[in-house]
Image (cartoon, rainbow, N blue to C red; front, side, top):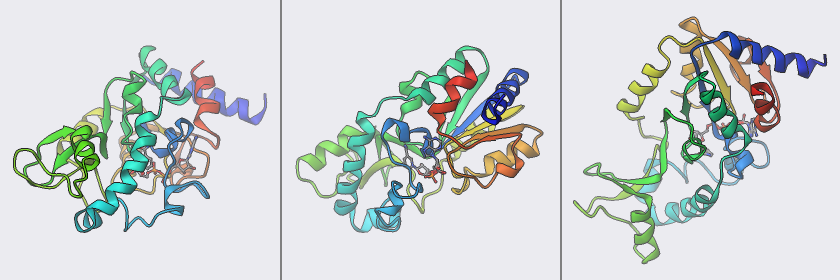
Length: 249
Ligand code: NAD
């Protein structure tokens, strides 16, 4: 067996021997669907835009129109994207009765489009918009239609507050109800599979630590090394689409 075949076999054995499995996915899960991640050298979004200028709640409120222009460009890529081999492999793992659910940092909705059930969107969703004042939630089309009609700052139909995409921006806390769901999902966990995350963004990057502290095992697929590689039972540095379907097969 080659070293790669041994890693794939070890990963598959971990899945076979675990009853309660949860996947934690990051932006690398969706790069093979054509959505850039944040930190990959050369292609990551942070190599093109300044995080303080884009996706921070402060800059959204102070320069709504400029931020929305950039976001709608990225949104077009997200709304056209289709689930890739990795998303579909997770759905298959769930149908086999192995995968309890997915905790995702992604806002693209591709796990649900791939028909994976029990998906917790820790950083919200690009498919909705939300009023910053009364917290009412609308489809994202409510915000987009106002922008397309020439409105610089889209507003809530109920209270007139500023509407923003219902994704977590830098400087915003994660929703407590969502965090509760995530904690419920990892109760009694036996194996956490981390896919396509640098594990640099907190509080999400705490989940692998929590899993290990509760006695679960960790398995990682990521092109680049992550902060948690040294704590994992198995780490494969490759594209998810190159290895996950093979592991599940
Ligand atoms: P990140 O950009 O920090 O890390 C992504 C990791 O995935 C990198 O380490 C990269 O090497 C790896 N990677 C890229 N393509 C891969 C592939 N095909 N197979 C395996 N690994 C691959 O992203 P992050 O740590 O997940 O989080 C950054 C934040 O970005 C998150 O909060 C998320 O909300 C947001 N984000 C979401 C999307 C999306 O919804 N698709 C896209 C960009 C950023």
